[in-house]
Structure formats: C-alpha cells, structure tokens
Amino acid sequence: WVLMVTAQTPTNIAVIKYWGKRDETLILPVNDSISVTLDPEHLCTTTTVSVSPAFDQDRMWLNGKEISLSGGRFQSCLREIRSRATDVHDKEKGIKITKKDWEKLNVHIASYNNFPTAAGLASSAAGFACLVFALSKLMNANEDHSQLSAIARRGSGSACRSLYGGFVKWIMGKDEKGTDSLAVQLADEKHWDELVIVIAVVSSQQKETSSTTGMRDTVETSLLLQHRAKEVVPKRILKMEEAIKNRDFASFAQLACTDSNQFHAVCLDTCPPIFYMNDTSHRQASFLNLIISLVEKWNRAAGTPQVAYTFDAGPNAVLIARNRETAALLVQKLLFCFPPKSDADLNSFVLGDKSI
Ligand code: DP6
Image (cartoon, rainbow, N blue to C red; front, top):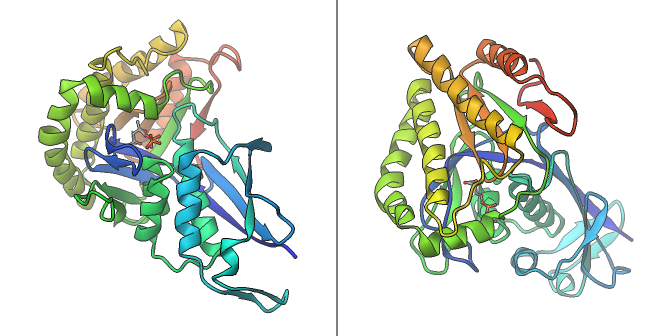
C-alpha cells in the first residue's frame, strides 16, 4: 500500500527583510521580519509526500530530479515532524499506522516549483513550508500553523512565513533553543486585497551568492547590520504593522522601499561585498536600477506613492501597486520602457494578479 498527501504553498515576499542569523543551526534571525504571501495559484510549490512499507529509504525529487536528503535542514524538518507523528487510520484503504510505525517507515517526496528555483524568488520559502505542511498532514502531526512555522524555519528561515496567507510577521524570539521564533499572521489575505504584486523576472539563473552564505558573511563583517538589527528594524516593524493595519499605502511603500535599500546597503557593507542587484548582465543590472528611478519619479510626480519596490537576494524586481489600475499602468510602463528583446535576455513579467 501507499498513502499520499499533496499540498500547495505560495512563496512570500518580505517587505521588512530577514538578513542575518544569531544561530545558524536552529536558523534564528537577528531581527523580526514582515512579508506578504502571494495568492496560492502564483509562484507556488506543490509537494506530494507518500509513505509505503516498500520504501527502503527517505528520498526526494525536486522538479523531477532526485536530490540528496542528507542535508541537515531536510533532516531537521523530517525529524521534527516524525517526532510529532500520531496514529493514522485510513478506513477506505484499510491502512493503520501507529505512532511507533512512523519511526521505521520511509517517505518519498516529490516537489515542483512553478517558478525559477534559487533565482532569488524565495523558492526555499515555499518549498520547506510546503514540505513541512504536507508531512504534518501525512503523519497526522496535530500542530497549529505557528508550531509548524517553527519547524519550517529549520529548513529555511523565510519558509516559516509561508505557513500563513496575507501579511505575516516572523517574531525573532528570545529563547536560545528557538521555541519562540515563529510566524504569526498580522492580517489575512482579504484585509488588503486591492494590492497587486508584479514581479519582473529579469533572470532565472541561480544567484551567485546564496542567502545562507551571504548572510553569514554579513553577520561576520558588517557593522551596519548591527545598527540595522538593533536600532532600525524594531522601530520599522512597529510602523509597518501600523501601515498594514490601516491600509496606509504611503507609509507601507516608504517603509518597504527603504528597507529593501538598507538590506542591499548591508550587503554592500559586507566583506567581500555582495552585489545582488548587479550580479547579472549589464543590461539586466541597468534594468533593475531603471525600475527604481521609474518608481521614484512616478511616486514623486503623483504626490503620493503609487508603487513600492523591493528586491531580494537575486536579480528580480518585486513591485507592489496600490491597486489594479496602477498595476495595469505599471506593466504598460515597464513593457514600454524595457521591451523584452529575447527570451534569454528578459524572461517575462510574472503578474501577481491574473486579471491584468
Ligand atoms: C533576502 O530564508 O533564503 O529573501 O534561512 O539561510 O535559508 P536561509 O535564508 P532565506 O533568506 C531570505 C532572505 C531574503 C529576505 C527575506 O525573505 O526576509
């Protein structure tokens, strides 16, 4: 017999960034972060987990290719969920698995991303969140979303925020063991549903410096990070929570853009410096810089912000428009200013809203 569960999890985009760990094994951050989770049909991971007495080892396939499960991060997630597994009884199939059985049974995991893996679009976020959620269903681990988020965090920090929809805060926590470092939902997906996220996928290539090594170097060498984590982010988090609560786009945009800029400043303050926004072809780099000036000029001319930008650890631009009309205009402007020359040069605009 085989028992299986399929889950789908969207990625999330940080508007107050997580960058830097105080504990690398437990993945505990140096500051709180806030993100918005995309709608489930866009940029998501679909994961099927299955269990059978015929499986002789745990195995995993990502986008159809087998990958090693020996890494500590996969092992922590598997171990944590296994230790919470309870009895499963599938009456239809006549399958009974006891808590004890789970210790011996192996799982097969098949995961698909509908967007470029490791191109700075937080694929690990959707991936680990989905893995942990699917495993928890398969093994009947009755934990709430926040507890599951703390397990997903052990896979990849940003993954903890993808257990919830809407606006999510990852509370850094104080406990050395990380029991209080978990995600909470600030507002659900309906709270501010006129926002539209437009992602310009400038390059689908693997980024050169992974977030994990990048943030390790930053923690070791950047003084600016210490200032950011202790002085800047705590105040910014409070202001961002307020902006989200009041659907105050002007404050939201100002905070998101400033925080993205400071994150990249911290990367430049790292030794050796990390150039996420320029870590790409010349044309692509100028495209990203032009997007910033386009947004800045537009917002200034309008007298109040219309669009926010935020850039993660890869050569893609995330733009958040205040409503559908603005998003439609934004896409028009982008296509007019930067007409795609070839598929390889400028891949596509991925829309966070199908109706545009
Ligand atoms: C720039 O969560 O990918 O996207 O915890 O080492 O797996 P690890 O890093 P990861 O880092 C994400 C960094 C970021 C900002 C953010 O999502 O908050």
